Image (tube, rainbow, N blue to C red; front, top):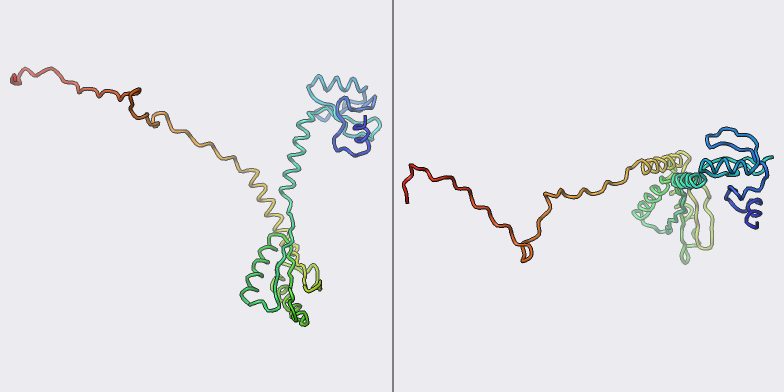
Length: 242
């Protein structure tokens, strides 16, 4: 009873089925989607039982409640499968932190900008951080200049989602992919999910034919077969006797 009350308040995600349905009369939908009308609960249960299926309450707030005849186990399996496919097709946006210094060398700067570009093209966001040490904190304009350079170098794939700001001895900004780049990343994820769904499972390795199997080495229990002597035809009469 406690479990049913919890379900009625929306605390349980499972629908009422069969004997858990509490209404006296229900409006029944057949397994093929046909409307079977209003009938007593016992009659609806008997109808579902005769078909080897379940009676599932799909609209508990209706008057009378609407129930459908279906295979509830198969229905839950299909729902779980669809949810897994939908989750696999979603783009999970990550936030990657890229650290730079006011005195970062040119080759190091280019290397980190290339990695940031690749990460953003995958549909993710980047947090570009300038770390100040010692008296470097007195030259905040250098950090602002570096962040501006990063934003300009990536303006074809990213937009500034959060402008440069200070936090302790760090200055940072957040870059997000442009709408076009984000859309392209979502399409690539969907294509990968569809391709993984269509890919057939690897076939099992074929066992070698019986003729190709090697026979065990001869032993005392398994002696080697005796060689067959060559056939000798009748002696020719014209040939001289020994």
